[in-house]
Structures are given as C-alpha cells and as structure tokens.
Length: 363
Image (tube, rainbow, N blue to C red; front, top):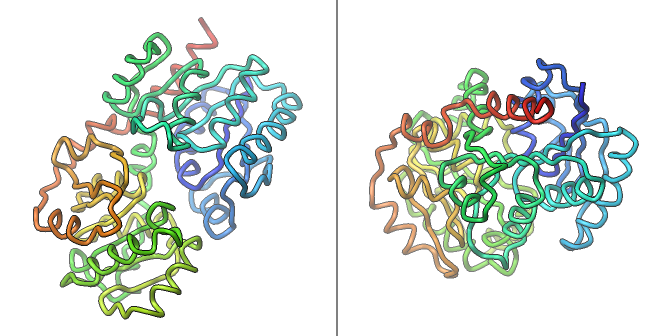
C-alpha cells in the first residue's frame, strides 16, 4: 500500500491528526508522522500526543525558531531527506504554518502528491505569512480539502475547483471524539461552577508581543471589569509581557493559571459563560460547545461564525480594544450549535478525506 507522510509543526495541527490517521490506517495505508519542531515543548506538544493516544513522531526535525525564511529553508532541507529515505508516495499537510508550506515545497520538487487539509481559508492580506503559506500550498496541492463552503468558494475563485472538495473541518471530528474525555472534575479543582466564569486564551503576536503591550493591556482591563471571574491559562510566549503588565497593574478579577491540556481547555470552553480568544481552534471549539464567544483578531478569521450570528469578533488594528470589546459584550448571543456543526461538515471530514485520498491512487 502507498506510504503517506503526515507533517505537523504546531500544536493545533496535532489535534487534527488522529481522525484522518485512523481512517487511512483502516484502509491499509502506511503512514509516517513527522514533527518539524517549529513549535515544540513537551508541555505543549509532547503531552498532547499522550492525551490523544498518538504514537510520537518517527522524525522530529528540530528546526526551532528563526525568521520565516530561515525556518522554511531549514524544514525544506531536512524534510527532503525524510521523503527520499522513506520513499514517500504522498504528503499530508494541515493549515497555514511555515511547516505546511516548507513540506509542500519539498514534496513538489520531488513530484510527490500533496494533500492539503484546511484549504481555501483566506483573510485577503498577503502581508501576513499565514496567507502566503495557505495560498501557495493550495496551488501546489494535488487535492485541497475545504473545511467550509466559503473556503470552497475561495478555491473556485482561484481556479482550483478541479482538485478541491468541501469535506468539513477535521477539528470538528476531533472535538466530537474528545467530548467523551472532558474533565468535569476540573471545575471543582478551580472552585468554579458551570456558566459562572469566563475563559480566555491569548497567544497571537499581534495581541501579546512586547510591542503590543497597549493592546494586551486593554484586553485585560476589559476582562477584569466584568462581573464574572475570568480564567486565563498563560501561554509560555506571553510570560515576559504578563510579568511586566502585572507589575504595573492589579487585576482582581482575572485568574492567571498554567497552560491547560487539550481536554481541560475543552472543558473550560464547554462550561464558560463567555470565551474570549485569539485562537482559531479555541474559537471553533467554543462555538461548537455553545459558549458565547468573542474572537480577537486583526483580520477577519472564520467569518462563517460572525455571518451566521454564532460569535462576535473584535476586529482591527487599534491599540485600545476595551470599548470594542465592551460593545460586543453588550450584545448577547444565543448559539445554535446544530447550525455551527452543519457549517463545518457535521463531523464527517476525516471519512471524506480518507476516501478521496484512496480514490486518488486508484484512479
């Protein structure tokens, strides 16, 4: 049977591996997992393999940090060697990271088919490296798998419809499977009750870099002003900025906690009154859980939620988001989870993707 190389480089990509992997495994495909090391720590990545029941990667390229070009080049050089050694028949990539593009470029140079999960998402800003990564990867791919109908429209507008398919969001498949493993005892651990707290995640550079201090502070001030206490698991990359801000300001209604496991984060989203996040994954999981959600982005992301009145988005370049967030918070939300599921494929994405890959090799 054909050998497929599955490439991951960032924590969100790990959460999309298992559903498709299991389906392809049942079809007899030989699969090899490669972690580029773009974002890797045992706390944020290693534990997740164990939580999701995944075998650790056969290869960790350990590229580490660097400029976008440096990181992409390092991955290409190292990954090419893996492709040649493993005699790969295909490469599966997810999303829009530097790992996604670098692996795709290496495969394309060797004429190896590329299968791109989460194709067609666009924010229409080519100044952003993620937008460049996703566009180039889609145009290199042999098969593009769109998570939403809107993403499929984007692919059609770029004349990629012949190789593109609307399949739904693999993350929803993972979410549905993971609901059975949520840790409801977590609420007792933090002495909170369902629907009587808020949950926040912030990690994007645009919100948490030292240069974004005013923007970060305005978000914290808004959250601190709310009646309900907000739990905020702090990503390691935010530590320095948070230490600076908390040394100058006192936040009485925010509880800063250690990073949570994937299942614990799902539990928080499912039980929170409001969720405030700049994570594409957490925002989708929160809406699927029925939580009232405000997404905090500079560019419109996952607009399907906003267009269908399933979530709010605090959008724009402004340094002071406090009035924007306050206005959105005043507009209550009633989340239709059935509609949210339907917009993202209703949990059938991995089944469709695996069949399309199988058909690709049999045609």
